[in-house]
Length: 491
Image (cartoon, rainbow, N blue to C red; front, side, top):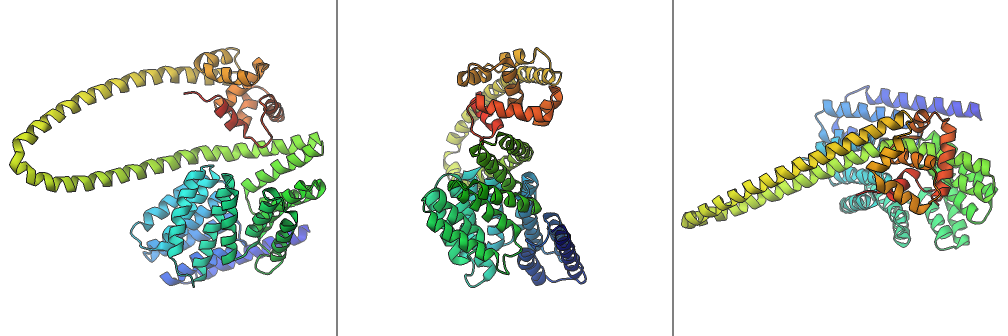
């Protein structure tokens, strides 16, 4: 098995080397660049690693720059963003989509615009921003529906939009809408992933195990065809859904086999979110089997992986909201400019007749504006003073935590009294140690940092987190960091 795996890696490396050598053996024209970025990139997605495919697209982007072809640059950036969000690099994905969007501003191409918008929606969905994901996905769908129906690439893109929309609806518990879009996607181009999701729908929501079994058979049959035989990601997703199917029927050993195989494949294609889902499911199965050691093992694995995903997520959220703010400001500026032009034309006519009246109005407005600015400046100064005081306390708290000082919890409670009050409402028996641990989580310390500053083993931190979940009555799938933040949210 190991020899076969090494052989496959050699084959993929040869494919990558061959593609790169062919790609840059000559200077390609814009039509050939389009083919490479759309068709060839799609074919290579299941054959090359994410890293190799990113390098491949970067080289095509260089070729597009040499040809002074911004559309090719934009496609390349969007392709790279697709690889980045799949491996949890959300911040970098948004940065590349920003590059793509900037290059596409003066290009009137519905396919390209729809592709960029759809990739934004995928990033926002993985960042747990469902409303934004659905909004962007709807915009992408409008562009996809304008495309030529007889073009295979266009039809596949519409299927991709429908398929992801079904996932978003499932995430916000609108399961019937999710099923509708799964069938729309299947009508365009059946693939194992969508069929497995339909099977999961019949497993969990409609409780029709015969229908679910039938759809799983179709999914696994498709995975054995030439087109999907080497698609490890679709097989990993199908196995994850099948594991749920087995778990529902209390066939726990079969469920463990399915989840374990899914983990292996998901790691090979670098899909951390799918690995996380598998870990959580395995913990759930072992809990049902009363295998506490294995349950804790997979809970710890899930917690560790979730911490690394969250680290990237926080910086990506900041970047995405900065982008949204910039877009809002641009829209407001456009609206102001249009209003100024319109009112300016009318004002020019009126001013000639009522110049004195407007002169008095302007003087009055200027006076009010000066008064308003003074009030705003005063409020800003007061806000700065308050923030300065809070910042000083906050920094002192951080330093006390790092020194493992006995005064840490006392100052924390004084500065953020609502946090411990809310936690004690949930469980009045929380110890001084529990509250200190919660405080460090609330302050954003990672598991590694908590272990370092508290002179604990990393495994001990994970065990304490597991016990704390029980004390706060949280289920295994809940994110401890987000839960404590929401439980103890302060104004």
